[in-house]
Image 1 (tube, rainbow, N blue to C red):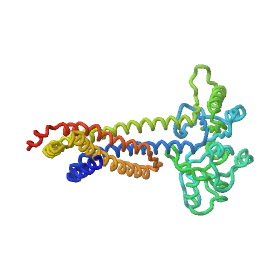
Image 2: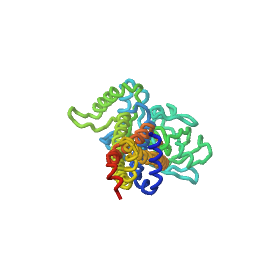
Image 3: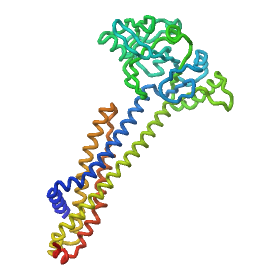
Image 4: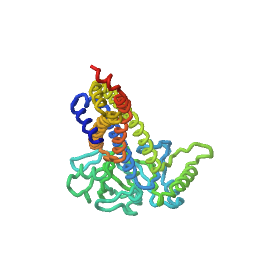
Length: 402
């Protein structure tokens, strides 16, 4: 009986192809929009978390001033100094690596090629704190850091731009007004969560940066990599206490620095992304309701058009439940066809958006299954009233219908 109802439903759908297509268009748009929005939102969240993970695991970032997010600002007001770094290094426990850094955007020259890039002054602990590995060469020695040697480590983008396919190790580049020898090449990290290319960078000893570029001893950022995740709150509190003391922040006064837990930032961004994805998905789901109303409308029209057919079936012995199932199955078939087309369209749009936005394609089988089942439920809910109306027609009145 169910197979027969399904067969009749398909015949009815194919008999009025254009009308059937326009009817299920609302379901197609709704399902496609929900799947595309949720998939793109999940991919965006995954990319943000991956980008923040590139900054290092269990990372605390200390900066002077009240800026809470984004790359270091250009202001050097109330910056940290080497005494602050020394106090943190000597008094914090449970720390895997700690590294001070200062940055400047400078044009770097090699032969006839030049490139504007970020020059970072730091020490030997920077690679460990940022979990940055070398593709070739070596890191700074303690002697080079203490003496302020004219050596540097290049990022992949910088090395490719200045030297092409040549090995940059041992080559010299001109940074500001002095020559610097490349002793190491960083592995690629790609774009950061803030949109800048992390591989367009030159690292040099902090003392070299202070003497040759900055002309001062200011430090804009202190990166603290905590050994164990569960120790992050304690290390953060200890670091804040040390910084309040060294920067003479009294009780009740507002801190003139920030110590941010990158894990918390990643979690906050993921939560925000999830909420926005849910909101956009809910808005897109309104199209499903509109599609359901369209199905109800067209099924009512179908019942009116086929009143005489229904009367004949009832007159020759068809039961009300058989007529009910025929029209209900037809409504469900329309809705599920729209759901299937919407799923294919939604995944295609999400894949295209992921490619263009350079985010992971994170399609969820649960979301696809839920969209499919929900489209079927729309067919049941909005198809029941027209089917019930068809099943309750008076056979004699139906046969007289013109």
